[in-house]
Length: 115
Length: 112
Image (cartoon, rainbow over all chains, first blue to last red; front, side):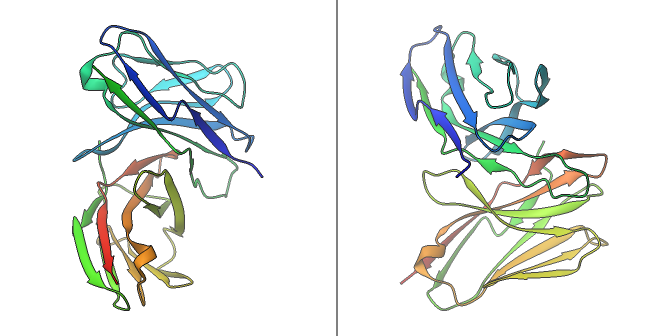
C-alpha cells in the first residue's frame, strides 16, 4: 500500500545544530508540504513543492529550507536550530489532477525538541 | 494565515449523542475538507465538499456548506468514544487549489 513516512519520529537537538527531517511518499504525488503544529496555532505551512526541483516558501519559512530532487522525497532542514523551532512537524502530499480533489495525505509526524 | 475558524474550540459529549462543529472561512473556494487528528498522529481526511454542493454524507458524518455565509458544519451522529479527536476544516483558494488553508481545530471528547 502507498504511504507517507517521516523520520525520525522523535528528535532532541541543541541550539545551533543543523537538523534534517526526512519525508518519503510512495503515492507518486507531485505536491508535497511541510507543516508545523503548535498549540494555539494549528497547522502552519513551512515550505511546499509542486514537483521535482520546485520549492516554495510558506507562511513560516524563516530558518527552514527544503529541496526536491525526486518525486518521493522532500527533506526539511533547519539550518541552525532554535528553541522556537521546538514543535511537531508534519509532512503531507497530494495529487494535482484537474477536476480531482486536493485531499492531503499526512505522515505520522516528527516531534522535535531544541534545547 | 489561518482562514478557517472552527467553533467551538472544544466540545465534550456523551457516547451516543450527536456532535456538531462549525467552520467559517474568508475567501472564495473550490472545496472544503474536514480532517480528523487522533492524539499523537497525523491528520486523516474525512470528507470533501465542493463549492457547488450543499450537503454530503459519509457514514455517520454529515457535512453542509453555505457559500453565501462562507461556513460549513460537520455533524457526527451517534458518537462513539473512538470519535475522540481534533477535527480540522481546510479550504483551498479558488485561485490556487493545491494549497490548503487550515483552521485551528475543534477538540472533541466523547465520554463513555
